Image (cartoon, rainbow, N blue to C red; front, side, top):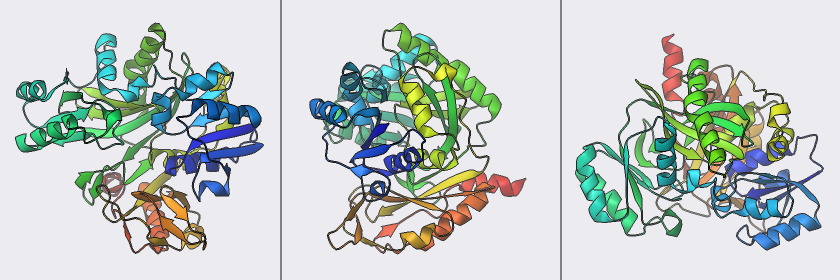
Length: 428
């Protein structure tokens, strides 16, 4: 069949790489794609906000499956428009995508369904937000309610940081999609991990775990970013804990969404805090993470096209569980200087072929190809350098060897991705 993949980042490059290997894939289109995706797909110009144009393209090209990569088109209801036109779509509709589109929606659902999460208050103005701070004390977590490109969450250690976060949200700094509402949450202590599950609205299929690094600097210092690296699996999320996550978090969510008449279809990406009281939900994403998708795809041995189509056609109950390599996959993000605040664009990139010579994969996240054929940086996070190995330390060594083969003078990366788990391995 012909497949259409929507998106242009590192997540979509990893999906394109894996979809192109599917026995189901006759022709793969990507909109808009990027230079890396273009190695696997025919890149086309489509505005995902123009639902009629996307539907018309799918009709003209006889698309058998649409895979929506980013969150914004999902929250905008593109999956609904495509399903109404009888296309198979991987990704939730507008109502279900509120699990990512509104932090408050998800917190309220957790409260109704008894899902373990941090205590919270929803606020719609600065006065109420500042009053809520007294309830929680410090540190406190402050979140813009809507989509903020991974930048709308502040863990405030001081009152000044909390006040600044509240000002940012209610001044509209994070844009229209983030809204002028906020969620104030209690600070949870523990280690963060991510768990992924596919669901067609009833059946739940576990789809791996990962841990990422949000801070820009080594030692988890500096500003929060969209993610500077990740590794999979997350050994800290044991089989026993995964079972608890499914039973107490994922399954109640799927039941609640179905019970509300808005069944969830797609991937549920649960950001978790592993507390002394057990796993608690921090937030949901309604798409594969970035760079978590890269490490998951690097380990996946099953046919991705078959799995996503089964999910889109409500056939997960008849599908085999996905097979993953037991090896660790680790991604190091190479970002443009100035990221996340003011990334420098236009920096030349060389050496990707040399980086991949040893088996690593370099996924493009923010690149552009000039008419002279020179690859340059066009975004904040530019490359996701990904490698596998029998341990975190081995995967880390391979990934950084590939990083060092790349010439990107105007870029930077963290040099300690996977440090916590590598230290645990060495202590054993």
